[in-house]
Image (cartoon, rainbow, N blue to C red):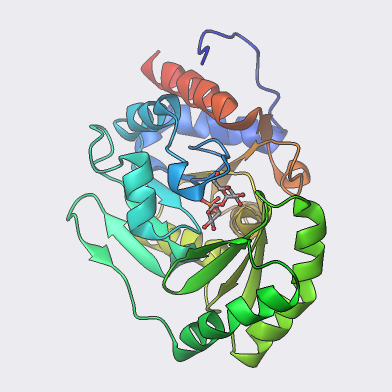
Length: 281
Ligand SMILES: O=P(O)(O)OC[C@H]1O[C@H](O[C@H]2O[C@H](CO)[C@@H](O)[C@H](O)[C@H]2O)[C@H](O)[C@@H](O)[C@@H]1O
């Protein structure tokens, strides 16, 4: 990964204001990042989506300067910590990881995991799901059991787009029967407990930290509520906000909402590097 590129980032006016605010007062900055597609490259097997070294070291370098760093992810919190080696990296001492869209939490400061029990509906839906998939001819879809949710991945199937389209209505009906919701993502639908999204997770962190500036880096549909939360607080003048879209050919929902668009995790690493350089200057 080449971190020496001098490509200037094209920031919106609001993004430039936020960048300047971070440089002026890094200690009042909350820096949040999604995991898959931002810190880690998208790969076929979710269990092998190890974070890129450059993104995590970049985050850690910033972690020594900003007030707080956080990962806000749809992943199980333990899986995100494991795949990011977030408990091993110096510089991440202020880190919190909010997993399963904010249901779960890990704090580096204490090393403690907060992992609530799954509601009954999740177990019932899990029991029904194999029959639903078999009935659709999609018995080979990869399942990712995340305690409070269940991911159905189509990336490895012969026709991943077609399989996703076939799944949507039956999975929505299954979710409705059990009081769950559907969370769409890159070649995945999750059946998950309702109640929180990444917007709630970011607002919770903001309430705790009371930052002047908030950064959020995301790549997928699940990040839209976080982007909207930051934009809404920014519109009221409560915070400055810098929204980073880690772009891919698979999802463009964040492009219009972002202040800066970078080229996937390698681009995120370059941006983190440039921000760290600005803070060190
Ligand atoms: O909130 P995130 O950190 O972005 O997590 C969202 C989902 O990411 C994972 O799935 C995605 O990445 C996989 C590994 O690269 C890829 O195989 C899959 O196609 C993508 O959708 C993860 O497996 C899910 O549990 C997360 O909810």
